[in-house]
Image (cartoon, rainbow, N blue to C red):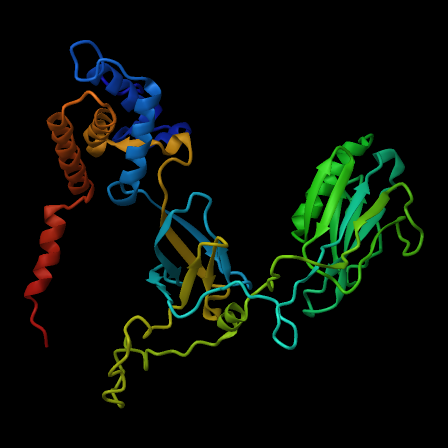
Length: 432
């Protein structure tokens, strides 16, 4: 009858690390099975119900409890890139807090700014009228040959935006490598312009294997939209460039073409007229916000023991939400990004957020403090949706559901009387 299915040696072994602490949780599947045994059957309140109905209400219980009952806060840490944007997590519902982590490892709260946004910026002509002209992004196909038609060091060159100067055109070089020697070719040189990617292929590889290796490196460059069908790669630029060039060259040459690569242009990147409004890539509001240099509103260092007040009243009237230099952010839910102020570039930030607990099967677990609350949620959900149940029965289980949810929330609040008492002792300290 015991619930433990491992001996202590197995549990504490390193191979079982992924299961440490799992006894405090019960899987949703076990809860559904338990509900079918305890609440469904002859002479019971629910004589018959499908397992699918029970599963639906069980998942709804996990979803609702994840928001304000379960301790289900997740977190992600990144270093803020130069774009000053963070992609929202795949299972993101809402943020709890966003902090910056300093050299001491202490997290300091960032505060949301309600004074800016990233609106869709409509393209306009010089006289202010809306510009409906759209530039179609260039699209090409690359038909890859097999390895036998490629010489070690052959390369494919593709135009790219010159990120180093912020304007103009650079080039990306995809060098085919058959022997794990990245330096088979002197072109491009190590000091030459543009980036170089090594496309590793094996001897005897077919055209589809060559295309798979090239597709991987094109995606790694993060410059194009890339798809593949067999040995044919479709490549679409994500920026409109001043000029375009896609070519394949024989090893160590700049003019001898590698003719076994068949490159075709599907769309030249021409301008056409659309019936829909056209938008700028970035709004002026967002561009100005991320380029703005914030002002430190703290005044002098209040943490310094040697600080001598020389500007009495200097902080009078400061708004506490702005009187800090931790940085600010805002969440753009429509595009799926968190936008940060310029002072956070290169710093470590931590996003604490809640999900709905339904992302993966391993997440669909219930803490044992809330197990009875989930049973009552399922029971009320099934009974309230039936037409032949007296209303007083429905109201009875509604009250029980509410009471169990409240009890689970108190339990999971994790209030310890010793810790609470320790905090209260500080209230007796005199204020000088």
